[in-house]
Image (cartoon, one colour):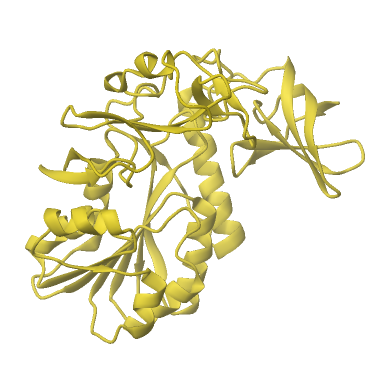
Length: 373
C-alpha cells in the first residue's frame, strides 16, 4: 500500500489509515510523509507495517547513522532516520498526548537533552542475543530473530562492542555488556555475582552486573538533579524511596532528612543498597505488598517503578499515607499518565513535569513528575 502518514504515536511508530479504514502503525517514517509500506502484522482493527520506500520525505528525515537500522533489521532504535531535534519534538508530542488522553491534562512538554549528547555513544548497558551460529546481535522488531551486527553506534566507546560481536558464543545465550562511569567493564552471561562501581551525585555506587542502573552515561546525574530540585526535603522529613534499586535516590536524600526507608524486591539490588546506604533502612519486598501493611507518617515519596508503572493499588496505598509530595520517575509516558490519573482521584495534582531524552534514537523518554496534595 501507499499511505499518507498522519501523526506520531506512542511506541516509535506513526499512524496512517489503510484504504479499508483500519489504523496502520507504521515504523521508519515521519508525520507528513507519503510512503510505500509492507504489512508485518494484520489484526481485525489495525495493521502494523514498515515503510519500505519514501515517496514524499519530511524535512526532518536524515540518513540513519547505523547500517543495521531499517525495515526488517535491528529493532533497538526507532528514530535513526530522524533529525535529533525532531526526535525530541516527537517525544514531547507523545508525552503531552498521553497526559491529555489518559489523565485529562493539557500540558506543554519540552524534552530536554542530556548534557553534551549528540545522540550517539551514550548507552552503557546492552543485552545481546546469540543466534544459532554463535553470533551476538540484537533482536529484530517484535521478533525473536537475531540481527547480527558488527558494532552499535549508540553504545559508549568503552563498551568495545566489536570485541564482543566478533567472538563466537553459545547459541541461545544472553550476553551482558556493561561499561561503568568509573572505567570498569564487564562482559558476562547470565547473572554473575560480581559488581561494577558507578559514579553519580558526587559519589560511587556498587551495582550488580546485570542489575538495574540507568543506561545513558549521564542519566543518573540528570535524574538526581531533577528529583532533588523537586523534592524540597526538610530536616524533619520521613521519606520513602520505592523501587529503590541500589539506593541512588535514598542515598541522596539521607543526609538531608530525618529518616529514609527504601523498598526494593530484587535481592541483588538490596544487598548492594545496604552497602551503598548503610544509614538507610532497606527493605526487601514488593512495593505493593509492603504498602498494604505500612502504617506510618510519611512526608515525601520518591518512586521509580518499572516500565508498566506503579499501578492503582500502589498509588492508593501512597495516598493513604498522605505525603505532602510525591516525585515520580517514569520511563513510560502512558504508565505515568495512568498513575497521574490515579493520584488525581486521591487528591493529588501534577504540579511540575520535566522530560529528558535519555534514550536518543529510540522512542523512549524519561519523565520526572511532582505530585502535590
